[in-house]
Image (cartoon, rainbow, N blue to C red):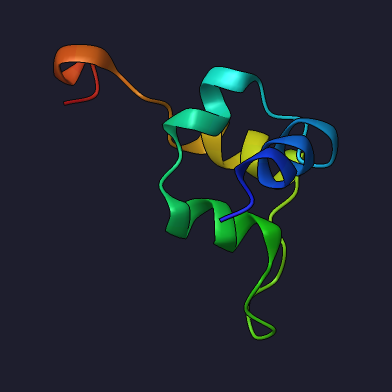
Length: 64
């Protein structure tokens, strides 16, 4: 895999922070990049929207 190219794309195009990029699985990264023609590209705005709708809550949090 071209990790340097993928990292460059993740940082510049998807505007991910390095830790966010390295926390992704290859499948998640490919989905975000839209490598499957039937899968729409997930941009930063959609990712932010999903993060707001489904926030991570440590230790089960108040919503558990």
